[in-house]
Amino acid sequence: MTQKPILEIRHLQKSFGKNNVLKDIDFNIYPGDVTSIIGASGSGKSTLLRCINVLETPTGGEILHNGANILDKKNKITDYRAKVGMVFQSFNLFNNMTVLENCTIGVTKVLKKDQATAEQLAKQYLERVGMLPYIKAKPSQISGGQKQRVAIARALAMQPEVLLFDEPTSALDPEMVGEVLDVIRSLAQEGMTMIIVTHEMAFARDVSTRTIFMDRGVIAEDGSPDQIFKNPQNPRTREFLSRFMNN
Amino acid sequence: MSTTLPEGFLPKVLFLAENYGPAYLDGAKWTLIIALIGTLVGCLIGFVCGVIQTIPIDKNDNICKRCIVGLAKAILTVYVEVFRGTPMMVQAMLFYFGFIQYTSYRISPIMAGLIVVSINTGAYMAETMRGGIFSIDKGQTEGAKAIGMTHFQTMLYVILPQAIRNIMPQIGNNLIINIKDTSVLSVISVTELMFTGKSVAGTYYTSFESFTIVCAIYLTMTLVCSRLLRLVERRIDGADSYDLATTDTLAHTSGMTNYPKPSDKY
Image (cartoon, rainbow over all chains, first blue to last red):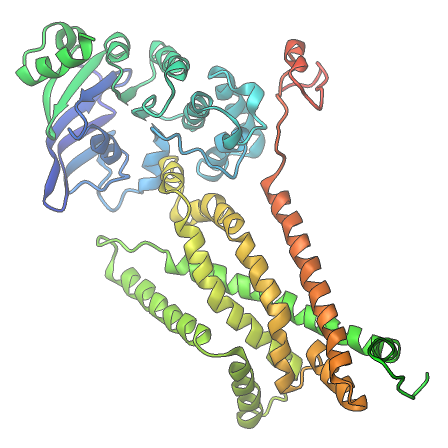
């Protein structure tokens, strides 16, 4: 690769007490990469994603953002987080704000842009996810799929360099999964850099440029979706995928 | 103004109301003023204490920050325990007579009463606020952190507005308790409603009749306040419905209350 990586994860470790959830994780994220992370529950996928955003403080290793270690105390964690968007399984929209306010608050308060610019940005991305008509609604008044689309618009309004998805469709009713996946798919086509933790295997296979299979806190296999899904090398990967792909 | 007391319960009540109405109302006025200001200031004290109590301390934070936050939390715990653990009447007497005895400043009973009610309410509200902040789902904090908000911004824009909404019923409780409990301030001769009632009762030896009036006024004040607080709560909650912000006329059939003009740009 000639491009410089946006994120470099170096020997990342995370333990909760004696429980080592992540053991020596190493990988790079390049601009335009759509990386899907798959694996069984408890394999450390979500923890890895939360460590990348420092919602969990890693217990070892380094995370380099454009070459600077963000775990170093000199670097401001809030500036970094503003550039790395996150979409949660449980949406986490601000319940006290309307759809529009959810998308503008970060732009005005964190990026310090004026209200008009923020609203314009927010509306642009809300339109992108098909939620523009709902700008006056409160999160409690819209459906799960709609909430998740607003959450994506909120993250996009910050104009992040990377977008992290933590099982974005796991809390949704089956009929709402499609609308959220469609939005993510179209972002992938536009070249947005994304890391997606998901249980939607078919989606991971179709949308990503790279797939990481995690098993018991390590990267068991890392390669193109074709390679992982059609010709997995690791027996654990084969076992995991056979459970998913056969039904 | 007739000065002879009539016979019978109802005529006596009417007589007192007619002759001492303004005095009762003046007492009620001070009761309300002390209760309202005391609750308001108490809430502010409580909010600040609650926020300080919930500052997270991380093992990685520097020693200076940990010491300051730890010390502040310890002081607040003592404050809360002392003021929740002693009767307000005793606090009022200690504060007022102590102040008069040991300082040269002549504090007025009303000022002393205001301070005691505020500090007392603050101690209760500190715990309520702490509970309110803990009641907000952790996901809200994570959502705010994930877009780069600082702890202070997260609190100010996301957590506190929701926590305060959740503790509104408790704020209402405190206001109503304060309206009633300012009656103990009569021991430091604050001329609130209870003090007025006692004075009038003493003038004509009409305790039962006078306190009937006092009772009715207290009940009126608390009922009105609890209704008003409900209105405030509903105001905070906002509308039950929302309008679709669209100029697509096909969407207008789905029960919209305000039709935006096609010229309105969203």
